[in-house]
Length: 63
Image (cartoon, rainbow, N blue to C red):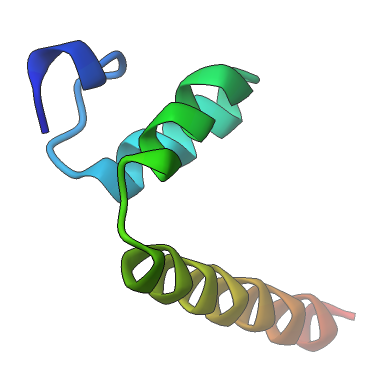
């Protein structure tokens, strides 16, 4: 990842995207996503779905 792409100081593009989303910086997140291959984006999408699923299970356990 080039210095231009690092706005939040994270070492990985995936964490940089999450930080951008958390900071309501959709433009930066979109630019980073456009720099990824379609396969990398699909992998990230699946990983985010897994995280969302884990959070849902934890939420249900807390009820």
